[in-house]
Image 1 (cartoon, one colour):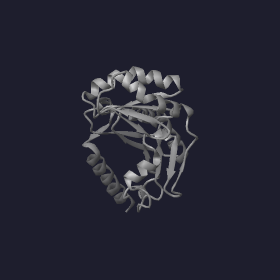
Image 2 (cartoon, rainbow, N blue to C red; image 1 turned 120 degrees about the horizontal axis):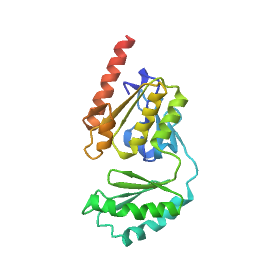
Image 3 (spheres, rainbow, N blue to C red; image 1 turned 30 degrees about the vertical axis):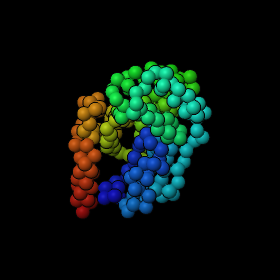
Image 4 (cartoon, one colour; image 1 turned 90 degrees about the horizontal axis):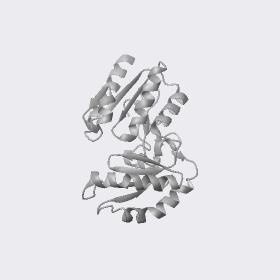
Length: 225
């Protein structure tokens, strides 16, 4: 809220449905965030604070088919107790974090879930102990590049903490090659070391991101003064 009015644009790019991200973030009607954009489901959905509306395509038919078959697939391949399904509307995610052996269950389900997704024209997006089955064609990198083009941004800062953010990191690296300055921030997660290795700056989790944005807001405010 302090930073947004001082720069061209602030956007949230998330694998969650846009409406859920808006609700969790308390973004609707928040002071200073009247220009905020939330790109949900890896950019397939768009929520604008100005209108309060979500723009989204029709659901991919493969999602409904996967949703129906998924419980039987999990049972067939011995998903342990605690494995659970999250219905995202336009995607379906399988979480293993609560399973008896989270990492082993995650690895055991990779191949069968890839096969299930492929049968129905979907792809699998891996995350931290989660495998998400969703339509192809969008990822956080595609969403970020498109948003930068639309806004005409002259520099980009991207912060993330999950495997799905690797595509956005690659997008920022591509923008750098085109002459657009970019900064990569990892919200310090020991679970996704790939991000930390590629980041320009590693901060101490969500609280570290807040501190960084607050410092930027103060710095930009001082420059404006």
